[in-house]
Length: 479
Image (cartoon, rainbow, N blue to C red):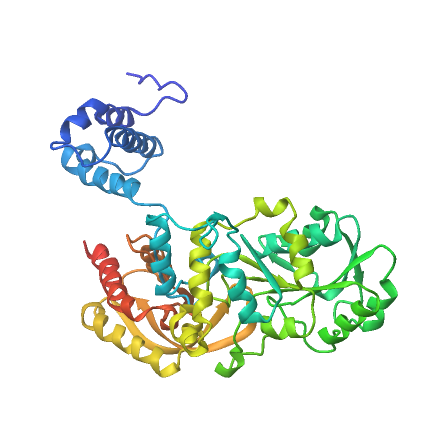
């Protein structure tokens, strides 16, 4: 007897039986007694999502048995799916990468004083744009302008939502339709393919490149000055270094050149800092105060990098220039909200006492952290996990290097200590993925078949949490 062949594209009989065994939506909902503590619409859509994923797995030939489609087998899978959908998308993680200002992980952590201020202004009414002395409408910028001027020596200040916005606003105000002279070696990409030349073109300013990639001289600027020149721009290359046969014009000489030709001089510091980090063995970075004292008309820098505050673009400089920038209609579109303002003010006030700032601002504290303190955290973590993980994972302490991150001090490795893990029951890549998928995700880095957890960026209060996460990821494998 000849068996009639199945029609082209028709699933095999065994596959069809499995598809018919998938429960209907109403049947599955009947299994949920008592119903989950979640919105009914979300529960129903999660059931549909699970059943459709089962259908696709079967059609793709996944090794599914009839028992895998039973109530006992599917309810735990549904619970896990629903829990994942109920979990916030925006979550905290443990940063074991050793990158202090990690762009993908939220950059700078805020100090406790800033968090207290955020809670206060978020849960209560505030004088965001009210002058309490006169009872009339005020300016939100006045809340931090005096503090910025005190800390930097500038005559006036303004804050917008990030440094790219600060650069755009200044160029739009001072150089729209006119020429801006900048060294070719300073035409940086800020990040996310956001490049200085493109910023300038968006504002209508005309870029005039001078010098060579590695060497620019004062005469290069002077030869390029014309009646169309509006601004001399210096961009601090905080996110890369050119080394070897190099030369750039000292800021004081550029300021003097601007004065001779009645031209404004602007410096984009990028990762501006208010304290000299070289005291901690880091490379010397110009502080905002030093740049202001050099006579620059306007300076822009970030609030969420080396400053250690919330995302913001800070603009300081000569009062006449800043007032023009404040009057630009674009300023309203780029202004900061009350939460940024609250966090920034709290961080800036810590800088009135430099030692207090270094101790309480997490970014500065991590950069200044002694190796011995990092080593103590590493040894503590090893003690917490050693016994339970000893049979499934090799655990060692290693000398490693941290990085500043955030496009700051790119060639500045920081000596650090890490806990290195080499799992015996899975690949190191599987371990890295498992840690990322925990309810409290853990991020590390892989080097030479070891997963490294750099303890510089793991807070003291996170060490026990990290140990529990490591135990959880290995316990999941055992089950």
